[in-house]
Image (cartoon, rainbow, N blue to C red; front, side, top):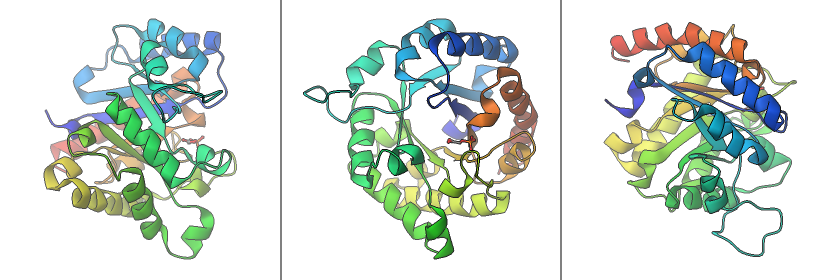
Length: 268
Ligand code: PGA
């Protein structure tokens, strides 16, 4: 089975759910998705650091994967307030997200910071979920594709082809995210995904580059999810608000799975 034979779908719960909230959310989500075979779904949730351990225990032998929303870029050291790869691994997470637009914009992380974090995550055996996306000004200047290439080439500068087999990308245009966001149309998102995939092939060769899952995120909801997944270059969805209720999230997963299977059946 190839990496892209599965539908990738996950959520980042940002700074919202406490440990007790995330555990009851995960228990419900597990119950609501238990019958879906592992081979067709890569389901993941990224809770806050303080909940990772309890979250992992809640989902223990299931298909649901737990990841961290961020990570310090050194192995250890005098970095007050940072969380090391070993700490995240010990808590049971096996995915690390880097480059979320809120970290870039609000916490002032740069492309170089994302490079250090992404490389460190992969070096430590995690799956790295690198988020990229243009902001509104960059979109208005018509330089989105250049921005995406810069974000990819910088963050992946030292990532080897072997490590790229554990890499996922989330395309999240900044203007599409959150309460004031407008979702990208499926054709706009698909065009950007095509540029991302071309860049990944240039970096890692046809086989490895084409196999890297590229997820769309930014105001995904139960009205646009199916149309997005129908697009040839969209391999999955990375969802915020619309996934924070377990029943809503399970509803989206169930709605998009047949669309995804049909797309793969047609060979696209
Ligand atoms: P949203 O968040 O789905 O609530 O727009 C997406 C994200 O921040 O990843």
